[in-house]
Image 1 (cartoon, rainbow, N blue to C red):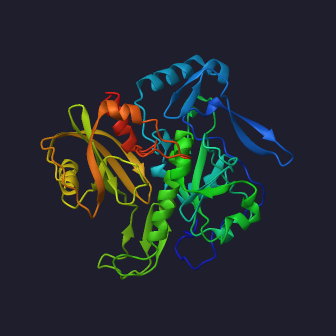
Image 2: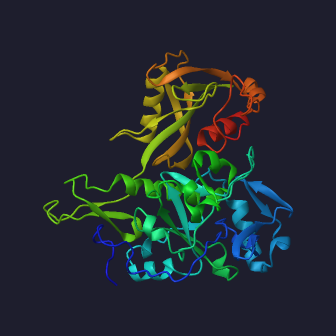
Image 3: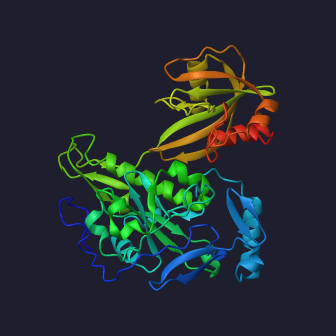
Length: 417
């Protein structure tokens, strides 16, 4: 099949001729998709995933896992696999999705791309100018958010897409034991729509919002998928031109390469650009039963968090931890140890979390980066951690739930780390 990404000036997606209409709410991307039941809703037959919240279950990273016997018919083998996986799996930070098959080996296969794109189990993850698409929530509601996906069969999306669809991957769940069919997801950048609120095909389905608002109150796997889509579309918007020669670039390999279109870009031919993520360290410094928290200059009033900073070229992660702490608050640290990491698509970072122990305790802040910093006792923080009310902010609040900063603090507070 002809490579339709060669020339960015050509008509978009000319090899695809949609012949169906309609929008679909995709089945959720939870790693155990058989726990969701799909029903037909309304005359237009839109599919909505109904989560069995009434089943007995437990909360794991904001995902309720119902009792398997009441959720759906599952074989003994599948139930054993599920139980073993859940019991052995360490909870993941928000925006990570370890069960998503990214299908990297298929990215160069144009025929696979074309065939899978219009498969019945394919859904588009729309992004508009960095915002993600979710169902409208009642005024004042803060307890849940649900993403809305678009069927690739709708007629209007090619006209408004800023680039070709980006293959995100497949949520396979228990497909290997024959219980469910996999769902394939593609990211689509709809930033060329002037105003989504005035655009009929989208207006009644949902609203584009900041992922930082919706992610913490969303199913963990779905939040991760939206973060992935947000990060990939941001990278494409920022790399329309070659950083070597300045010439235009075009998408390749299902969205995971941008190729310079100038054959004379370098002595070896056109430059290939690959998605990048910027590593940043984020760390909680402790001194016995107290920890060091600071306020960035752009933080909301009264909010305190851990220290953080970007890793510099030629620097190890541990060296970056020690350097950033010393630069920001003039404290020396030792016993630096890894905790966990978190994808952070704001716009494209990976936050690598650490703990460190203070070797000096006198604080001198860098006023260019830090507004305030201090040592806080564990018992005092435990009394204060639930004091935040968004309608009536308390004078002191901790990092937002869902962030790795908050997990570092909470794990230290409850002595889980």
